[in-house]
Length: 232
Length: 243
Image (cartoon, rainbow over all chains, first blue to last red; front, side, top):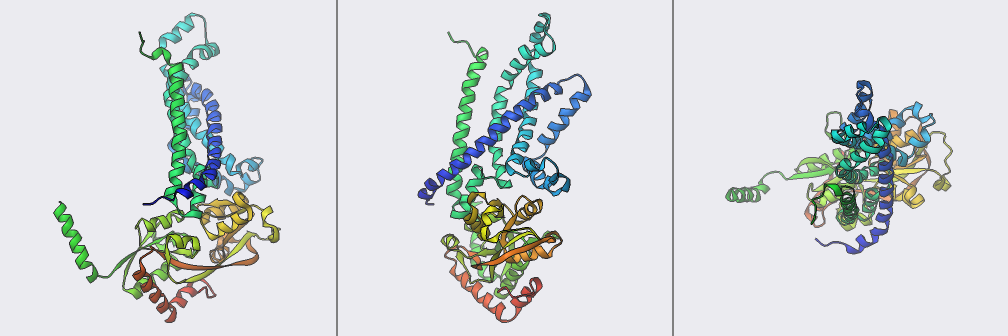
């Protein structure tokens, strides 16, 4: 098959414009979801069963349903209710951008909560005991010992979550947003060259993932230095 | 095993013409009243009725394949089906990728808004416009407002957002728009402004080079128009002729 290289090149500026929106959505959702996950993960390991149940219900829903369903329920579903359309939240829910951002945040927040919960539970018990012996408790213990240690344990799994989020963000195109995938589909509607345009879009996703993977490799090498085999 | 495969292939090759031809027809199934999925899970609508009438006339056995709209031409080219009967407008751009039969109906564009809404049809750019992605209506909307036009995967989603007030004006093909306005969901909405004549003819898309099939479809189309079968199907859906 002959590829239309000229069209691929011509589509690049518009696809890069879409890439900016993809990056913006993913970056903001990761930051907000990350902030959300810290207190929730701490609640998840609480000894109080009521406090534990709350974040569990949240992560169960968001990890247990497809992101596409969550997006549709939020964007098309909520808008069907008069109450929602007349509420103060409507200016936000009305916008596809905010809908996507909120759903992405809640979705990645749920996964990050569970990643962090596992990491907190994996912090070696001896270290916690040592900290307690030094007189640390509660907030200080978490701030100085548990969380810094948990972040390092969570790092490889979290790197994976970022990549998954980047790719899942393609679903933004289903609620009219012109992210990288949305832009690609709009260009395809004009050119009828799905193979060419998706090749370019795929290459851009791949390039972004490549940067992320390598960024995380460097980060892991630095913060997990203590785990590496000693060199002579 | 390879022998059995060869044998099967030979059988198919030599005995094929003895049986009625099977034609796989691609359609979308999300574009009432032309093609939709009925309560029984089967495709139904004007396109489907016309396709069945054509198949009957051609003594061909027809099976229907549903495919999302923005992948419907790629699906044809990938030989997932042999013809698209899905209310596809004949355009120069599409003609570069596929061949078309003679038109089997004509369409224009219309604007739909909430009944009584103040829509400045001379200056649509100041309203939020929406349309279904990869359609003539979408082309028209993007010509007016560029990337500000909101493009939906299906016409149903566009209606939902018109109902939610996320878009003020829906640019749509007139006939499905007419059908929606008759439905319970369409109550409280109305056409605004004039019809936009875009010289839009609807044809059946085929792979380029399938000239034999094209000629047979054209002949069958002429036959069902001449003998009144077409008019009967037309009357089932619209009180006016759409040919």
